[in-house]
Amino acid sequence: MSKLSSLIFKVPTQYERQSITDIFRAIFTQTDLLAEGRVSGRYQAQVSVPTGTAIAYNVGDIVWDSNTTVRGSVAPGIAASYVRLGWVCTVAGNPGTFQEMRVLTGA
Image (cartoon, rainbow, N blue to C red):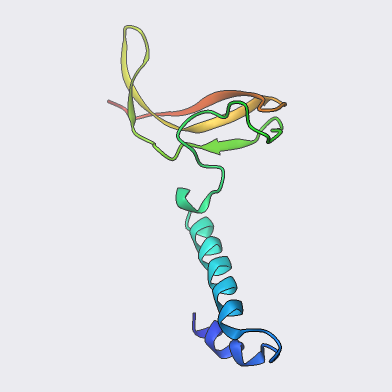
């Protein structure tokens, strides 16, 4: 934030410096979280697949799972655990049709 503190003196006097600082700090924090790949930086992260939302999704849109944990077997009788990363939209719509994105754990 050192660049922010040096730029704050360039804010015109008709604007409240603290408000401008708070706005830039929020933008920088969000950008840092996204650049680091943090789920907390993603607005669309949620605990379940989208249902009945006001958002129209397009094919390929991703909703990240904010409650990523190791899940049970991938299919009955197969002892292979997986982690659900989220859901990908396969049919556009409101909310659209989603399929889980999974990664096997090797266990």
